[in-house]
Length: 279
Image (cartoon, rainbow, N blue to C red; front, side):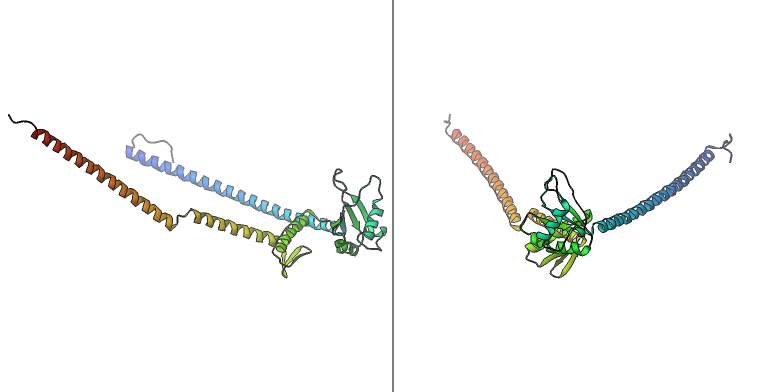
């Protein structure tokens, strides 16, 4: 189609050609926008898929790291409160502690893989990490840990950061259950309450639900406090009526005073006129 407009066209024909050209331009713009939209949408979808894939990979890697860390720590225990000295034979000290304080008489140096202190130097005494060769020996130490009750010593499992967080949640809810006089104890990674078992995820979900219930309860209580009672409504109505009656009485008094003043004025005038002597 030629872009040149013949000279002999009428105004109406020129107008029709202009409208047609504008329609074509509009359709072209709409098509390009639609194509661009589809392209952008496709790129967003690809980006979302990549993000989801990376997130899944990250979850798998985290699980693998956690699993490897647990495997490395599975034979470890940590001893707290063991006196620290500048020059010390830590192996002998640990063996003596386990034999006498934890009362495992046949425990000896050959049961140990590695022992060392860890933590900041200003933390005194620093805890001792004990790597034990046989898992059953570790179980014996933890089982006899109750013998250290009411002393300056304690032993615990060497937990990964996630396990420590989970144990913290379990202990928190164990305390709550004990305060409610429920039969409760921790077994492995679960809290047992009245024969029912809860893991840390269950307890977090329960805590979340309780919090939501409290928020709903507080919101309902707040709304109830703000809602006027029937007594308040009645008081408002009575006060409104009292004001209305007062206004009416004031209006009547005002009208009465005006009538009295007017009547007095008339009487006064009448008296004044009657007192004028006749000529």
